[in-house]
Amino acid sequence: MAKTEEKNKRHLKRFYYTVDQAIEKPFNWKQIWRLLVYLKPYTKTYLLGAILAMVVSTAIRLLIPILIGKAAIDMAIKNENTTQLIYLVIIIAVLYLLSYIANYFRIKWVNILGQNVIYDLRQHLFTHVQGLSHRFFDSRSAGSILVRIMNDTNSLQELFSNGIINLLMDIATLIGIVTILFTLSPKLALAVMIVLPLMFYVTSVLRRRIRRSWQDVRIQQSRMNSHLNESIQGIRITQSFTQEKENTEFFDGLNTDTFKAWLNATKKSAMFRPFVEMSNAVGTVILIVYGAHLIILTPENGGILLGTFVSFAFYLGMFWDPISRLGQMYNQLLVAMASSERIFEYLDETPNVDEVENAYEFDEMKGHIEFDRVQFSYDEERIALHEISLEMKAGQTIALVGHTGSGKSTIANLISRFYDPTKGIVKIDGHNLREASLSSLRKHISVVLQDTFIFSGTIMENIRFGRPGATDEEVMAAAKEVGADDFIQRLANGYQTEVEERGNILSAGERQLLSFARALLANPSIIILDEATASIDTETEVKIQAALRRLLKDRTAIIIAHRLSTIREADNIFVLEHGKVLENGNHEELMALKGEYYGLVRSQFQMLDAI
Image (cartoon, rainbow, N blue to C red; front, side, top):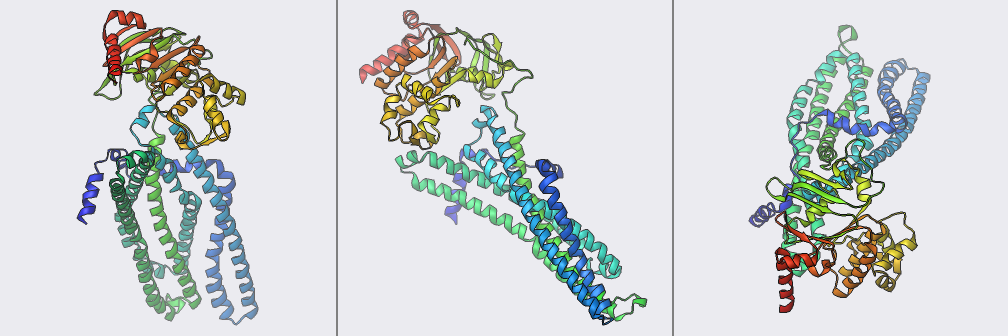
């Protein structure tokens, strides 16, 4: 026990525990109504059909006890009318058949309805998340986002597939039963329902605790999913440092927390049904004792007939089932509330980088870039750029150099408008990027990162990701330009070779060559190479440099590199330090200046000489 507690304390310190926090909001129907909006496209088809089927089956259920008690017992049997009794049996059998048919279509239509709603909700959430800014993804793990899109939407499936129609059916049934019970015998109805106020009080006390426990389940699932995603992606590092045992213990802590959260939630949810059953038992005792007394009395003295008692007993048995289901439905609503809070938390997120109305469309782009006193910070404490001003002329090859954290990648991110500057203006071809259409801007920019992402699929599909409408010939031409065609042809199925997620069957250099082909296929006006040659050997780099000299003509190229030998031919080199531009010029000019750039080059050559 002590060992488990220690593991729990240890894993609570993990960084992504800050990703998902409890969303403290009171239960309100507005949240549920917001979910119900997704039913609107199907209102006149599946929803209306399911409601009609529900009305038919509910009406039949409410009618049958009257036929059995009042018509069959008090009239046909009491008067020994066999013909009437036979007719009643036939009518009841036909009604049961109609109820079966109505229930069949109700179940069919509500399940189709539920699947359509979940499909739309998941699609909406995924589309919305894809449009959010980089700041959103900076503060959340991939596993946490995955849980929102998959697990939380799936948890709403039961609500939309059965819950809503069942809720309407149970409410209609209860209203009908209560009305009939008071019509049959007001005194007996009041007597058997004396336990209802106590039951409603207890359930209202449990409500908040149940809701909070199901929300905690979602949080624990999100954390476990985050760790699973992290563990699978980092399995090589885990095995390299022989941390399998530590990782397993950490997962055990997460698994234990999830297990405890489920136990706690189900324990609290399970308290409702036994209480309803106990209320049912008390009501049944009252029915038998007080009902027997009323049967003994004559109707003239306030008594009831035997058939009325039988009908009353039928309805009382039917009464507690909807009560119990409504309790379960409330638990279902609490689960839906916990999930919908987390879903709408994401849907309510607005991009930090958004478009103005009537945004400017870049039909063409020359690639002239200007930074006018631009300041930027990723958070309130650390400033990445200090009011820098610089100019990158169209068609030039620009290099950004400096130590780690000097602001090189930040400049590239601002050009692609993954972030907006805190102060100042970034312009391309004289247009303020805040006033530009994001899609038209990024259509003219290709970014190649050091950590190349390869999608599951074929080599051909991965390169075509840069321009989905490109022909096979254009894809192969781009691959040849960057020298990727040679290794692709050596693969088992050439361009149709399937690569797994992140391209694990390829070397780092081969993955980087594919990313070059993907970027060049897009035919951009601006190419950003962010440490793009860091994972490529010298021989491959020579091929790429030769290809880039041909392909970067009349394009603006921004090269970020620690390996200074790759930027010697740049038209302009900006040397950055702590978010400020220290100096700029071409290689010869900066070497002659003998400033920061000169020192960086000398230090790299000294390292090479030492090797």
